[in-house]
Structure formats: C-alpha cells, structure tokens
Image (cartoon, rainbow, N blue to C red):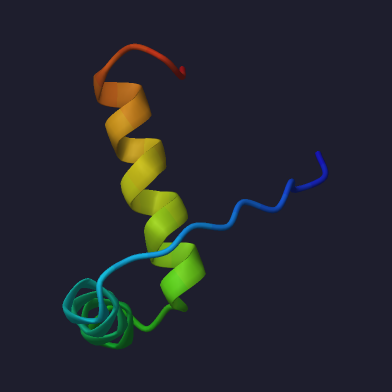
Length: 48
C-alpha cells in the first residue's frame, strides 16, 4: 500500500517533545506520529 502525505503545524514545544520521544524510541518523528495516530484510530474502532 502506498503512503499519502499529510502536513500540519504544531507548537514548537510539542515538536520538541515529539523529537525527544522519537529519539527515545529509536524512530523518526514521522514514524512516531503515525504510530500514535494508528493506536488512537484502533482504540476508537476506526481501524482494525
């Protein structure tokens, strides 16, 4: 399955927190955000 780009703006403090969390989890910020959104969507019953 191909990936579709998605862009949005966040506060600098949130970006810094995401960068720190991504580094701690040995992943990119993009990968972390996809994981967070995927986990949320599954919890909401929007994804299997």
